[in-house]
Image (tube, rainbow, N blue to C red; front, side, top):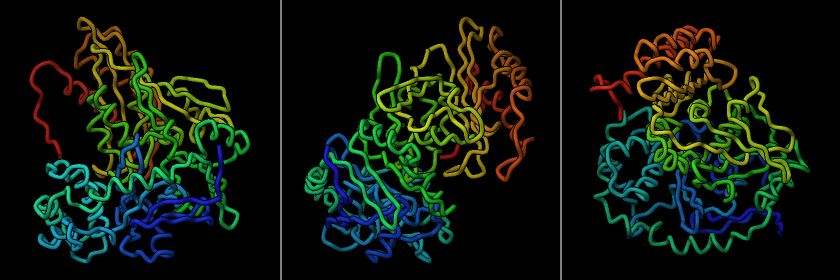
Length: 486
């Protein structure tokens, strides 16, 4: 294993080598201040508005994958080995406006223009992956972009029309794909990268063994995967995170594979990467996963990061706890595995020793006799933090409930199972009255808090109502009509 004292990446086709990069340096500041690529805007500095969206291309199993990313919370050091594309580099086949830009002009998709570059980049990412998207795919692609002016209707019209402005195969990013892939492969030397600026250190380990060795030497280091939360420590809390060990590039930690009767998911696998495998095994998670942030957050944020963060309102722990997930932790060469619900000890405290890191998650495959659901309650439907999240897994055999796992987030200082409600279900008939009786046990399980997201009374009322919703989702016979949003 070698090491180097620089990070290397492609920016709009040019190779960039940087030796002075601090752990807290963000990609957006480099683009705007160092390279004067001011088409990329800073709106919120917290990955919420999408005005800073750029494309980041990376090699995944030998293929080149472009993803929309929030540059405002993307640490500059993590661009090592990537290809970054800003709005200035987009172009059509003949060198003029890109088809997305043409469509935005033709359909009056821009007014003040501040958010427009980020919207263009989000739609450019969609066009690369899905040249002829459906309305639902367009709406999903724009979840991470806010606009104060247009009311979104002309933006949606532009998105529907972009397929008519040129052959997607003629996009310069497509025609140059083989060259970019080869250049990124040449940059992938498998070495540890260490850079620093003004005393702030950023380290990218060579592999997982190197990560374990680094954490043995620096147990105080900040482990950073997707930075969708850590980025805000820097931009909003102005919190130093040095020395920071970045792990999002480690292929071993991004693997998703079936092992016997379970899915094994590497801790650095992103929400976007995990969605397909989880939805195939657990169809109820497909729509739920679409409500985790926007595409920019899902491309960067990781399952392991959401768990290791330990937030009581994290989106994924309740659903995963209900599925019986287990977490594997590693320190040096030693591993230990425990039920996910036992990983959360108290508010802000997890069962993770100094020098130890979350390596993977194991999720048992579903029993056909088990009914599942995952629910998220938030003030805004898309790209919002949960006020309350819940995971349900209820096994029914011959009309009787034989097992129940009910987990909630936002109801306590940690994601937690509802033990009394579970006990009220097991051995009872599968019926609406049984579920409503179990819901009445929730006050014995939780004493929720009031904060700016929701009051304690609201949280308890909604949590109890979710038992009725679970019944309506799984009751025999036709489903009652419900308003669904795209």
